[in-house]
Amino acid sequence: MRYFLFVAVIALYFISSPAIATVCANKTDTTAEKAVSQSDENITKSLDTILDEKFAPISEKTQEIVFYSKTIFECTKYEQSIPLILVWLVIASIFLTFYFGFVNIRYLKHAIELLQGKYDKNESGEGHINRFQALMTSLSATVGLGNISGVAVAISVGGPGAMFWMI
Image (tube, rainbow, N blue to C red; front, top):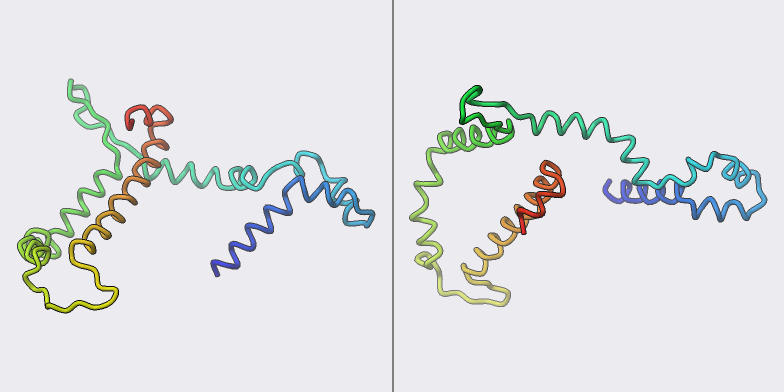
């Protein structure tokens, strides 16, 4: 399915690109004449422009829903606007903490013991990595993904000025 989608996107790109229209204009068959007779506006539009126009209403509506914010402490000097997505994240984390019986607190000692190697068997083999390397690999993937998505959200919400505050 992924390959089909990839091929479809590439095909749409080549169909809508002006380079293909130029190649078709040099041929003398009837399909080339039809391609040349289309309006210049449709021929010169790139794939990203076409996709932006088609998906703009959907993405704008989704952004309005996801980043909806509510003003709290109105008419006081502490008036703040809080995004609804932040409220949902806090509610979900509190719910899951109670649902799983405070597993994040109960197993903290066990996690430290695992990191110290208390339960290690003295086996070594080809391709074996130690516990610290496994932890750092997992942590780097988590933090790296958070940094990438965090920057994207900051720029989309705060605009280009958000880069100033991240530097």
